[in-house]
Image (cartoon, rainbow, N blue to C red; front, side):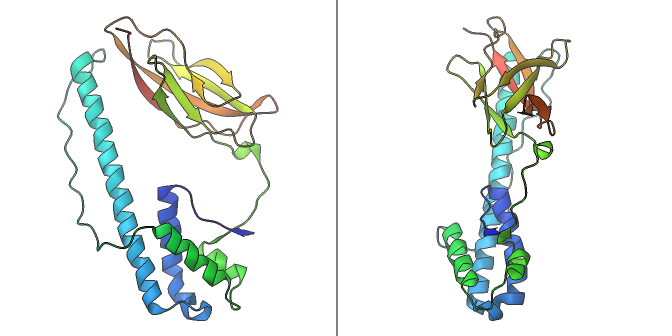
Amino acid sequence: MASFIATTDDGFIVQLSTFCGKLGTYGTLVGVSAAEITSINNDLSLMAWAVTSQNQVQSFAQNFTNFKDLLRYGHGTDVLSQVPTVPVLDVAPALVDANVQKRFSDLVKRIKGSPKYTKTIGEDLGIEVAHTPFDPQLGKPVFRTTFSSGGHPHLIWKKGKFQGVEIWVNRNDTKGWLKLDRDFHPDYTDKSPLPAVGVSAIWNYKMIYIFQDEVVGEWSAEQSVTVYGNV
């Protein structure tokens, strides 16, 4: 087993929440003071607010971009309904010093150095992770989309221990989902012809992992992009 710190913001919030929720039980045993418990809880409060607020702002930005694109280009029979509403953020908790992750990491190291520390305590605090055997059938790709310099959709994905991914596309042209390609070296650019000049279209993508030349695991979540004809 090894200690870990979650890499994603949402995962870090979950880990901090688990840690803070259990720290009161073990604090005295492993040498953590009441003031330190209060401090890490304050860190959690501001981090959770920041991540939630960022998600709201980013969602608004995406919705507003879609609104602007629809306003300019139209998408078939789609119509404008209403202007996206700017989110009202919750009141921010009290400010804390920068670098919450380092403070958390330092506290975890100190706790694990306590003679009273056990891996059972670490598991309960959420700072121990078991090494499980690699199971290809549990794979589910996570990817995001950007655009190449020529305006073609660019799919950014992680290979991990898999051989590659099989990519499918639905161009909303009545043909439904079609196999686009297999990619073995991230990342992937869809170089299919773009719509005619002045025309836009929504293309949807999904992918599934390949292992030992066979598709395995679960399909990824679908991602949509709006492509435009070259000008």
